[in-house]
Length: 276
Image 1 (cartoon, one colour):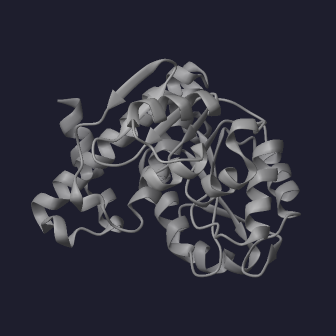
Image 2 (cartoon, one colour; image 1 turned 90 degrees about the horizontal axis):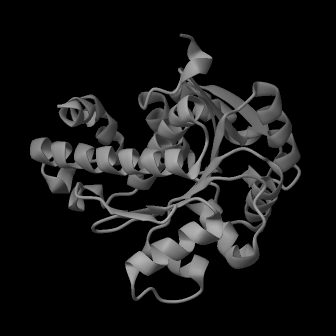
């Protein structure tokens, strides 16, 4: 075995003032067991992120106004090809500036590797129109909360299972509809997660989940192929363990006092409990 055997994950994220989202997602991908994790970030944020993530590599791309510029998409795509990246996570902390949104849209249209699409990248998809969007690769894992899902679908969600199924179909992969009783849907299968609670209702919790999804999907994809089945299994595992980490953390700290950055401290115990 070697590092490449456990997956090469590229996390495309970050903007001025949003480095925390990148760090949480990258730490989660590393903690999941990924062999190599690289953060592609705006060049102006690279130093701060690199200092916080000694186990990860970094790549600085063209920036404007504190975030990615449109021309950064070609730079990140070329870097991913050179590094033989297995999977991309795009979205945490990208920001809502027009340039960053245009960057995310162009990257998803041109970089042909499986991807986890999270946070600000989902909002960029909403603006671009998910129903008519042509992704460069499949399968994808989308990770919206209720508000993001409503923007993606263009209206209020009255039936969460139906919304999750529609998002999965539109993405050509898997949708994680976050919330109380998070739903995971893909390939005609709908799962409801039993773990997690109010302890997860903190900023940064979703970044941790996205990183776990990317890390587990990279490993499962290399072993069994990057398919909707492996995407669904990886997403379900990530959601279950993420929620269990929240439950274990709440037992120690109370639901009120759990921080997103503390969730990964409970991942080893969560994995051991799952194995039993």
